[in-house]
Length: 194
Image 1 (cartoon, helix red, strand yellow):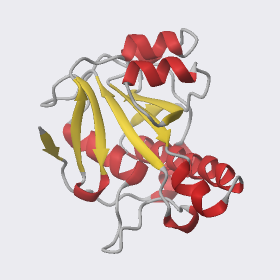
Image 2 (cartoon, rainbow, N blue to C red; image 1 turned 90 degrees about the horizontal axis):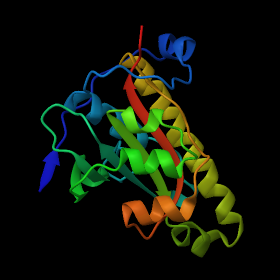
Image 3 (cartoon, rainbow, N blue to C red; image 1 turned 135 degrees about the vertical axis):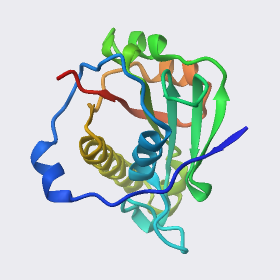
């Protein structure tokens, strides 16, 4: 089943840049479908009819895939979903949410387990290295950084918190999600504890 996500609203960038911080503690409140929509669009949404996305990509090769572990989003069943930028929608690829397993694979960073959502940014290196050779690896890592900053800024604009988590066992995360791409970054997102 595919879930269509709501349209995106405008935000003021200057306010967000000043407030952006890494947040590792989240309240127990769920996220809304609108918030999930905005986060995913910021990460890798399509911005024009040519297929360009919210982040720069070497040669527009777009080697990344965005998965999201949904633990607590109003109106969305738990599970792991794949973001489909071309339709701004998500498709469930695993029926059970795996936040606890991701937290254990991320060196027991248990705040991951309680976040309402966790983005998993993974790469299909071949899309970029087939064009740029080994230098393509560098371009993929740059692109992941662009995605992470967009997610930080969007989360901040929505009054949410996130943090980039790069400390995890790659093979374990890959096995948990049953994906062929290489996981590069985890980003839990939730409501900040005030």
